[in-house]
Each structure stands twice: as structure tokens, then as C-alpha cells.
Amino acid sequence: MMRVLRPGGLIGVRDADWGGVLVHPSDAVVDGALAQFSAAIRNSGGDPEIGRRLGGILKEAGFGAIRMTASYEVYDPAVAALYLSRLTGGHAIGSGLFLAQPWCEAVGTK
Picture (cartoon, one colour):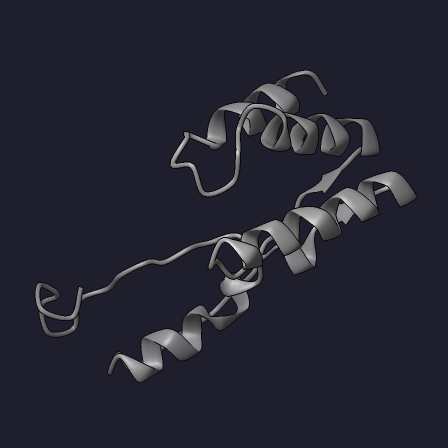
């Protein structure tokens, strides 16, 4: 990005941060599934909390005037459980499968 960005140009970067998932009301099963999901991401070489580190990564890469914001969505436990079950059942982490599809389907059933 640094190579192709014009002086004074603007880029936007966004990624998930699974450490900030909000489910209400709280549900022990969903909380456990989220912990397992985060562990699976780590075990496959990923970082489930990369979102909060993006500013530092950009700074280390030489970008300046970095502004970070966050947004949250709150999900019903049933929607979160459906999403996580779809990710782990037939949509293996790290397999390169298109993981947005089960998310959209789970949210669509809300």
C-alpha cells in the first residue's frame, strides 16, 4: 500500500477483533465456543485480536497520521451459536473457504 499510495493519500483498513465480540444476554455455551474459535485461529497461525493491533502495524510500516476507530454489533446468543456452528461444522478454519457466507446466513436468520 505504501508503494502505491500518493502523498497525502488515504487508506482504510478493517479487520475483526474476536476479543471484542458482544453477545447479549450472556451465554456460557457461546462464550466457550468463542474461546475455542479464537484458539483455533491462533493454532492455525492467525491472530483473533488483530483488529486492535492494526494501528501499530501501520505505524511500523511507516504510515503516519493514523486514526483508529472501532465499531461493535451485539448479537443474540442463538445467532452467535448458529454462526459459530457453521464456521466449525464444514467451514474449517484456515482452509481458505469463504467464511463470510455462514456469517451472512446466520445474521439473516436473526
